[in-house]
Image (cartoon, rainbow, N blue to C red; front, side):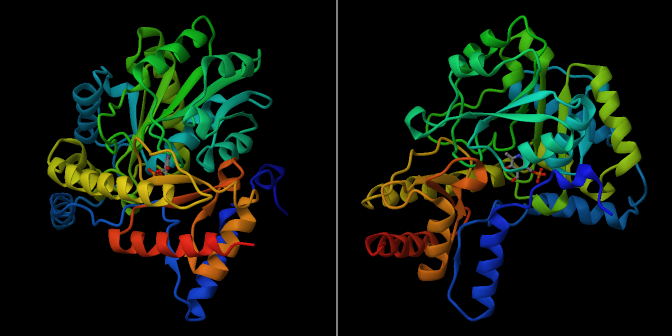
Length: 389
Ligand code: PLP
């Protein structure tokens, strides 16, 4: 009954842990969850108000497939203001989350057998969507020894005549690594003269800490501007996961047109009310709220990193951005699934095993939770590690 195509998609490894956590909760066990990939904050009021007004004014019909002009203008203005990038109205599309932007991009560009370079640890969705599009994921391993970043040499080695695309995620889910301008320049140097596309997932752009500066991949050079498709959205930095808004920007108008064609035949425009709300998330109206959330994440990040590094057998590189810690537990247990499962069953702590992100011996701990719960959770993890056999 099922197509060959759908059967190449894997069930998420993390589903097993999530299902187990839910079962334990149903049984009345005290489970603390650190597996969420979304902010614990509510969407800023100014955004909600805009949405309520849109409903009351009857803005409830189909719109242009790629978004109303006001929304596309807000996207273009944001890319100019924050990233120094100049795009026109036929170079941006609003989609149902960054996830749909990525889906559209892979479907529109990847042919069977094309290779897509994905640095690990990676966000779980990339290899699955690449496979679904007929492509072959080519994984470059990184570890905490290189702060989870690829080197130009690794990239050069991974490139073959079949390489179609490189996926970059900065700041990274699950490690919080952020590429500097110099690092992006050296990646750009390797790509020069090739026709390799770059999918730059910049979802966590606004969540950077300390003196870390976010640099947009497309801003590195004209050459990078032409080969980069920027993917971004408001789910993480503006606490809008449920609204389903993401966007992409690309220099190549033919590619943008192709992605728009796919969206027109699959989902059409994104929710009309979300479009009105998203303008407020892009145009600076919610900047004070965004900064309040960023500061809260930064304080949690510092404290959680310090607490984890004080536990014998665990270590973590302090993230430069996003809201996850990718904790190394190899000195205690090499198998991440076994470790995460035992931690859930014996300590009531839900985290995501590193295997789900293509990196064994780590777990991902989300600090998108209040500080008291974080402290309590890390205390429990400490006791669990101390008694681990
Ligand atoms: N990209 C990265 C790196 C993510 O972590 C996520 C969500 O987990 C997404 C994209 C998807 O975001 P959206 O809610 O806009 O689909």
